[in-house]
Length: 114
Image (cartoon, rainbow, N blue to C red):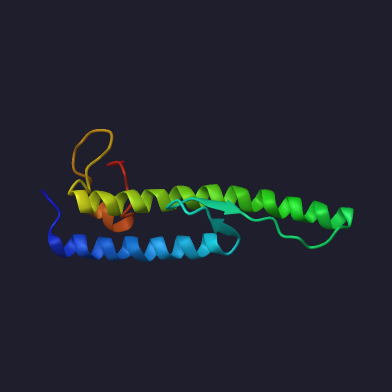
């Protein structure tokens, strides 16, 4: 059962909203590298005191982990949008079967049926 055009439009809108949200979140602490979906965490300069430097490094490490997580989510969303353009959206990457539309409604960037 192929996805109907009305559902595809709704899912595309959700994906575009999620893409914007993820890019905005990444933009709070990271800078785009110029490659789609790739960001570089910036280290905040709050001073030269050893305690301030430790705080800077701690913040950088926390943001780096967050960057990796958000980039992964952004990659999934971008891939789903590309699949829509190619006509392969909603197909499980493991089994090549259609992903249940109810699953896609909950998580439009789903790559697999489970």
